[in-house]
Image 1 (tube, rainbow, N blue to C red):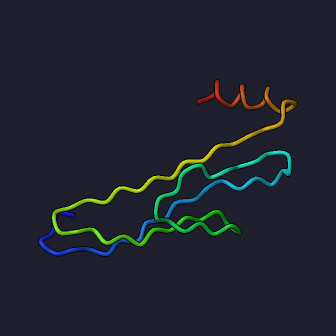
Image 2 (cartoon, rainbow, N blue to C red):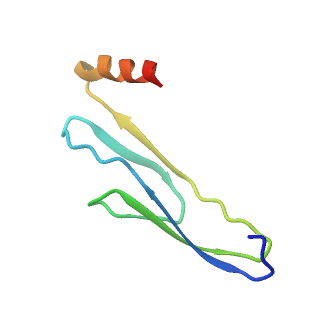
Image 3 (cartoon, rainbow, N blue to C red):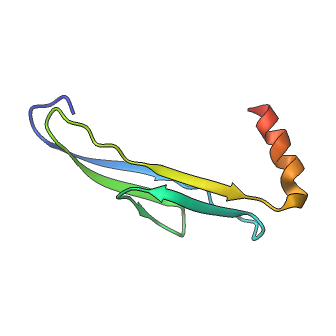
Length: 79
């Protein structure tokens, strides 16, 4: 916040949701945010002090069955 006054900031992100029961998405770290389990949206309402900053963390893992591992490898090669 480059202002002389504190600021209220809303931050939105989204965790992917699996449509396949064999693929698991697990949130491994979420600081001070609230996740909507229906759409995966994560929302933070942050109070940022004047001339200050606020950090948040969001991390997730994706676990796939062995029979789909080849698809994940192909996708990684595309990145």
